[in-house]
Image 1 (tube, rainbow, N blue to C red):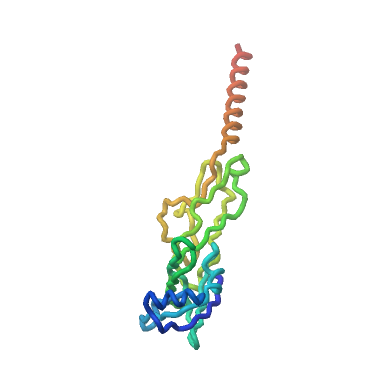
Image 2: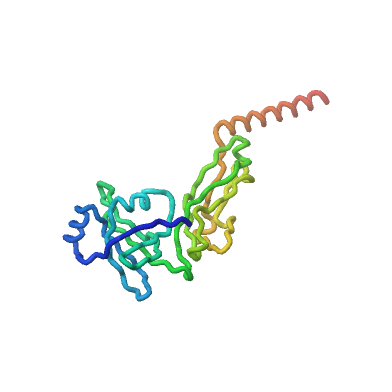
Length: 207
């Protein structure tokens, strides 16, 4: 999984008034949970420095630099302004190399589905899956091969298997499917009609 470098400054002032002051200065209040002493670390980052971390479909492990301390972490929760959509607060979770983490990873479809060749339309129903794994085993994407996916069929969570990783979504959740399009239905109906006509012709010829 990709890592994102982020530098912050320890925060000493707290409360709503202090938070508003930080935001007016272009800073975002943050906290990182789950350290070795179970102590939360409060800090601020420049709002521009987290734009590529927050406003993206990609998922990152975050290398936090707070003064002399470096912390491997991941984004746990982001609070946005209800109207402006500005980032108000970010919660991070301290990550350790020897402890599994739970994180949502994007799904990436690979291959040309057999059902698409037959006139169907491929749809991605689940764009991210919640997985549990050691940080070093986390991929950038969960690649799902759809080459053999036929018309009207789907791939569910229970059909997937990734090494060194546990998928936590329910087994019957649909990842992707090939749907029958209107044009494909028309072709299928036309083909059925031609088969029936041929069968009728053969019967008449025998009579």
